[in-house]
Image (cartoon, rainbow, N blue to C red; front, top):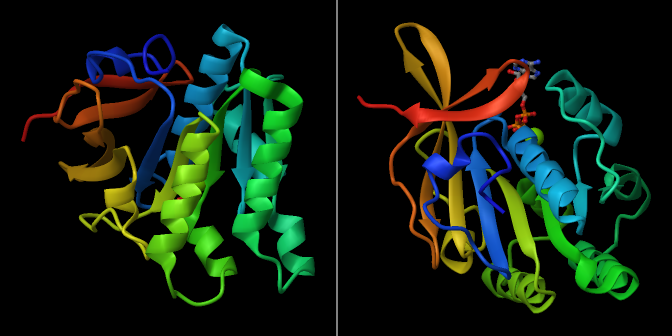
Length: 227
Ligand SMILES: Nc1ncnc2c1ncn2[C@@H]1O[C@H](COP(=O)(O)OP(=O)(O)OP(=O)(O)O)[C@@H](O)[C@H]1O
Ligand SMILES: [Mg+2]
């Protein structure tokens, strides 16, 4: 999953991860959460021939694909993009977690063991659709358990302010198997992007900040940043 996908990611992960894993991908606006996960999955799915689902809840598919095209990431035939932005306008009363579960079970039924990857963009958008904050920890526990039961690599994109903690409403940070932090750092008047692994169960990884940049139109993980 992590080796041979995004260039330089093997600097960060010394060994790879096994399914199932629920990984939070956190960071402020513009930190390349969507681009990073989309690039990672496209590359992984193309090489493995497996199947993945990328669910976008707030950004339209057109806008998402335009951004990916700008970064030179090609459309991947093994990845289905599902767009919830239309549904949200029509259904006030919909139970979105149940709807997601139905969708994922459907793909598992149709694609079987080929279906290995899922990304949800984003958790904050999902919460904005769900009523109230009651029992969120319980609901998220069950949702993450479902993702594990389906034996998926799941990447849950979650907005997080600079230096904010990795929990929104449901103690997601504690419930997940991994936390990837994508951040922005101001150095000499310039903003630079970085990636840091805060948690990855059953994996040996670096704890350092690694620079993240676009090199020759491609997203790359560069060396560690020292302060
Ligand atoms: N061709 C390009 N070269 C360099 N940077 C680019 C290019 N295309 C897009 N970007 C950068 O990608 C950023 C958007 O990345 P992305 O949408 O993945 O971030 P995000 O963390 O998902 O943001 P949000 O929280 O708003 O969803 C833009 O702000 C821009 O800086
Ligand atoms: Mg995004």
